[in-house]
Amino acid sequence: MGFLSKLFGKQEVKTEELVLNSYMKGKVVDITEVPDPVFAQKMMGDGFAIIPEEGKLISPVAGEIIQVFPTKHAFGIKAGEVELLIHVGLETVSMKGEGFDVKVSAGDRVEVGQT
Image 1 (cartoon, rainbow, N blue to C red):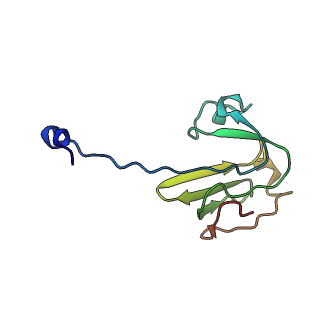
Image 2: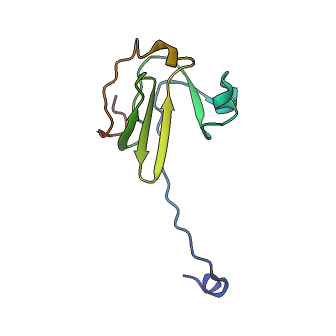
């Protein structure tokens, strides 16, 4: 701890950096441009969107799959202390998993670039 931290009783905060690789080929757009108010108004948190060029999703981080939604359109990944939600498409809940081919399950470890 530095002198000022001791003097004012503040603890130094250690920060870690998490690099997010792209999870899909395509054009990155600001989350506020997504035509769905839940995402555009950041009700699910901050983020970004990708207008896809192909239908293949890969892991943007090394971590653990903590959730695969039953409708196969969204995934939760924990990387260190950070939890990510990857949501595929708009109104994809209504597809009830049709058209999705999921390669992972909750509890699986994934590496960057893994399908």
